[in-house]
Length: 399
Picture (cartoon, rainbow, N blue to C red):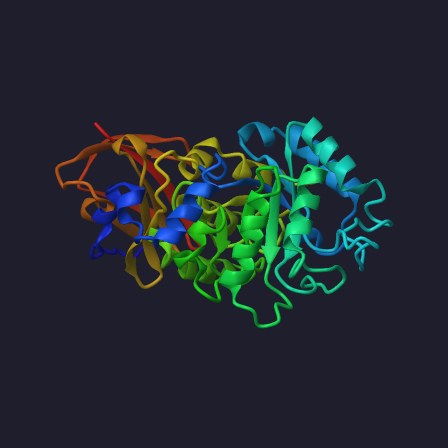
């Protein structure tokens, strides 16, 4: 029998102010770095694809070309998925005689410039992987510690648009120093390159990375399991006030379509990532994705929440055991809402207007983003029955 839950509101009204007003104050140095980073990148969370979650080390240039083809042919590119990001294992074991990074001759024989040209020819952008240490995490290619200026210029010369920068083999050097050095190098490279810090949240990058890059990992690596996904959502939530246009909290890439969760669990995964303004980086093989996977990744209304111009990260605003309400303000006085049942049985969840930031007298139209149903003239609260490990997601528009 469905459980009836009434929640106590948290202090969600703070989120109805502008992103600038709620974000903690930056130091003068950080403000200067942030100003330098205002190059038009990351005004909304990045969208695209990354090779790691599905392919791990088994990548080559033909796979990357086929993924770019599939991104366009599937219609995902038109929805905003623009980055095709190569993760670890793309480079040769050693640098060349001039100390330059070079592509692995057996798996990327045409080189990165040719691959970038192909991806750009599809109207997409190419991302690449590096590491703020002496070797990358796989230890089969060099890191950039001590080579930041040289590597940044190499990436720019190849036409790279995005750098995911990992944290392995870092010799105990402060992450702020290491990531700042590459940030400066990218800004001096002659090309606008999106800088994605993959520091794993060890040194609380949300507190300092807004003056360094366009997004920063707040957690360790995600796994394709319900337990991992939910745990990471919780860990990322504490940093909500630090995110905003130009700099985003990153709870890691999407696992949707990789097979370890159910359709409803993947729908919850995508809904929460969209609500919290996480990067939407697909991690499955989109060449052979199922209809269910494509349906989830292609939901334009859910994507619109993620890409909303207000740029305020949604957060958990009510909780009673495994029954939760997550919400966040949107442009135009609207709000996004997720009723999330993390428990093992079907249950009733009630979202109170006071939690969402509305007056109790406010009347809204509630648009269910997964069914398309619109409920008119809802006042005071929204109550729905939600299946186990499932969610319902709405945009609430005051009348």
